[in-house]
Image (cartoon, rainbow, N blue to C red; front, top):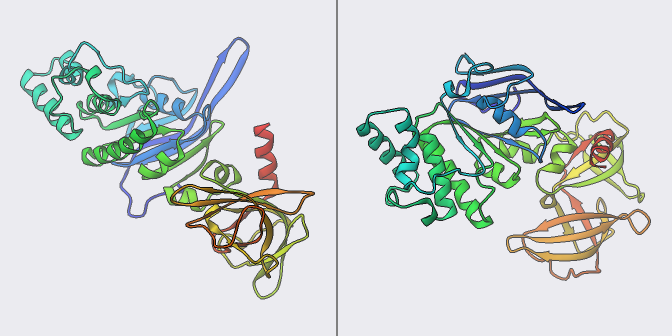
Length: 384
């Protein structure tokens, strides 16, 4: 399967052709449409996509909370498709932590072990060990209300891990935290997951969250998997306009494509401007269509204060936004009749370039890629 890690571990969770159809009041909604995913042992694998794409439904099918309409779920050689959820040895953390407010941290984490009637000494050892792992060993006598949101989230994580689950499921576990705490806690989740060495399926709609902590990512749209890969593969080499548009910032330029001799490819834009690129680039080679959509990330374009230079697009600076780590330039290209705004991220302000100035844009031919025009038409149709 695409997106496999080199020298990877054996597959722990295998999802094949998973389907889920919800029926009610004359409606038939296909939530999952032939979803196939392999998760390797010890891997943190993320399902990423917008609301309604099927990522949580996939997680709930793996957990046993939803019964698939079709397909198969296999975990470590066992057919999970029909096994009840309580027999799956799965730990799960939900959006709401569902902690018992009247119980201490220790009692919250120990609750399931007590219900299972594990020996008291064993419960104490397990809970003390897992609280130390999540960094809450000094707070075990306190109530959840006395702790911060991040600490409460770690209680929920400890409660899920105390069973020594073979599989950990995390459903948007950071969505209730503020932005700064989310950044800290995603690092904590990664640290704890690596220390526990537990195979983990993580669900989020947050692209930065997914890119920062995942071993691999499945990008989902409309109940289907659009692409599977490592974070750098997903960001740097999207296989479709849909993935390129969803992950990070993206610029798209409609163009006509004509290959020339000596390995050059000439692209002509709606304004009549033309640029030549190296058609032997892995991103551009073997493009079979006469028309295309050129894709480039904001950091893959450079602004020059000298418009009209060969092999550049000309534009006008509409606004400049200082973001600390980058300076974002909003540049209008293709003139007044068919304007298009382009985002360019520079690591510092460009001397002599101000709002309203005419500039040139230089595209990095090693990073740009071409997509068939019908992909953009399909994306616009889905968005309308």
